[in-house]
Length: 278
Image (cartoon, rainbow, N blue to C red):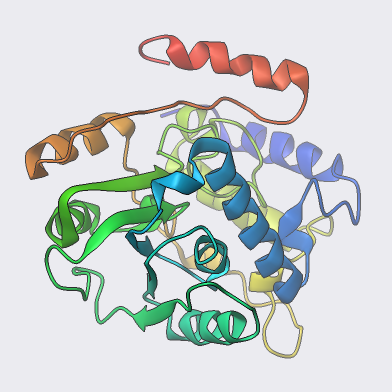
């Protein structure tokens, strides 16, 4: 059930048309791949500075789970950590992270590992003091297994510092480049969202992102025409995350809900994060 597809398409198309061409701040995905990687690294560092302290890592062994191109790892390496390890499933990203680290003067040289599979963390039990998981958990399909792995590789008293987008975040489905409608997955069915993304992808107003282009810079075929479910998101909610943590013996020490960013009016939405159910 849900609202009709024509309405979803019209709203999405209107919102995309309202974007200012070339405004990278409003639409970072429009950046070239290398620039986008720098933008992502800066975003992760900003998230860390906003919610955590440099002293959270002092003289500790740190794991960046889902490290990507290593932007956060290189920042952490100069915060007084004893050791920094980055792990990611994508071997190309790991090679990029290694090259990035070699090009910088760092207090500690991070090590980077390509994960052998999505079910395990390739480190010994009781081997790290702090795990960072920034903008990753919503993409981990084997999330219950991985959360249990966190509890194994952490030493007694260890912590997980996490920043993530749960399913009922206004942009939980991660389709804002095609259907930038807050809570679209609440008001429209999954089938409607997929069909809308397919139509927007083929529309003249859609500007392909770097991941929509092949090696020659040509727009890739429309994958949305073949999909039956939204890709690359696990639909993990805050409530389910908290239940899994309790089952594996992890205690939530601090949690902060964040509303919209941007303007002062948008930031006022933080008050609604304190209302149960919302």
